[in-house]
Length: 112
Image: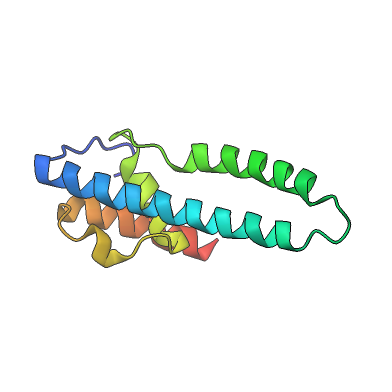
């Protein structure tokens, strides 16, 4: 089923956008909290440069992870589910064909 082009209903598109945005917001909140912790632990004065490096790395990783094209959204949700960024209940309402593929990808991610 990898490479399968799924058709998205209007309802699924609305749900997918909500789940995607919620996961992205959580990820940004976690990043913000991490940066705050790094600033608080600025004993040597170099925290700002470590933060800059961290943000550059996270920007690259985040840009690669959060891709809202429908052609890759199943993989994105599979990864997010596997990483614990979303929960199975978040994606209830998607078609069973999509859920099956998302779960399969999530299982693969968890086993790595």
